[in-house]
Image (cartoon, rainbow, N blue to C red; front, side, top):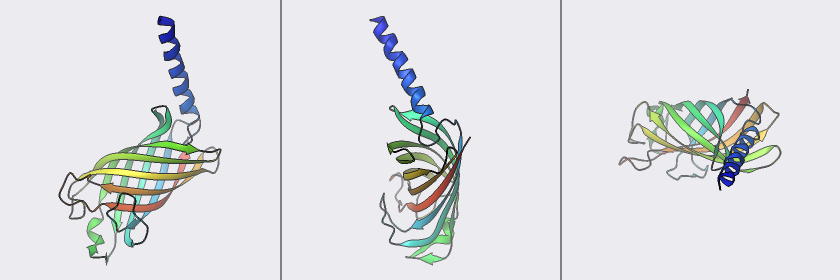
Length: 186
């Protein structure tokens, strides 16, 4: 029986190490930085249709390391972001929502090919101030990503990103963005 447990433990370690070295986000590298830019959408939905584009933008830097999530390749990240609002549209004063934020996230690969991957992710963090759009400083993040590997070190990612307070406050109109990111592995 001890041999079976030892074999299972060894197999799990080998598979985890293999998943980290074959990670679609960063290949054989252990570190990744990314720059992401997003266009705001006025919607309260988790996955909003890009029909009501607003003068609201998102810029964020991300540092990631490879990991696994229930044996699926993943990356864990720390993110520093800034929302940028300009003017009024659809009854919202977007200038009020120019707010810095920090959040931690994990993205998980669901499907992959030789040069592409499809993933989803979740995160939690804080914005510097609450407002009437999101009635708390606490933020929860959901993300859908389609990535393409340009080469071993550089990937392009198209994403949809949603921030809300997950109904922990009365106001929860969310922030939603469609965007483009570029990653560099090292």
